[in-house]
Amino acid sequence: MEKDFSLVKFLERIVLLEEKFCFFLYESKKIKKSDFKDLNYLQELLINEILSELIPITDSMEIFVKNFNINQNKEIEILVLIFKLIKKFYIRFNIKQISKIGVYFDPEIHEAIGMFPSSENKKGIIKDILQNGYVRNNVLIRPALVVIYN
Image: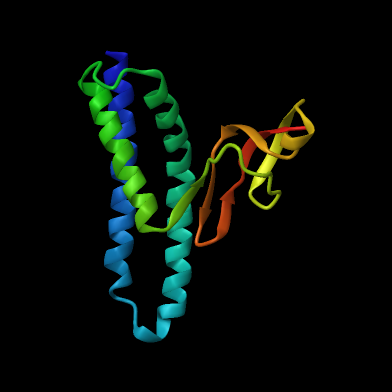
């Protein structure tokens, strides 16, 4: 019963975000052409607000999908479907995940929270990502939390 309650709450949160976005699109059609600058600003604010809600959900879902068998039951199938819809949203609004292991540490997009001893040729290379980062239109939303070879 508790799983149903959690899934219902999660779905309600997704529906609320969708309603906010649809309301914004409806209201944006009323704005005069001279107000496009304001519209773009409002659109960026709304997308950033939605992202601040979606990114933690995405983090939780990625952990969930990695740790459970997808064919386990219907609830998991629903969560995977929702996860795919969120990923489509990211693609539509040019949101990219920072999640590559084995690349050089970049302080512009990564935040080092740990170091791992290694040979000289791996120094400065990302060993593990503890939390994915996100970039939208080449603007950092959240840095990736990483462990690097030292």
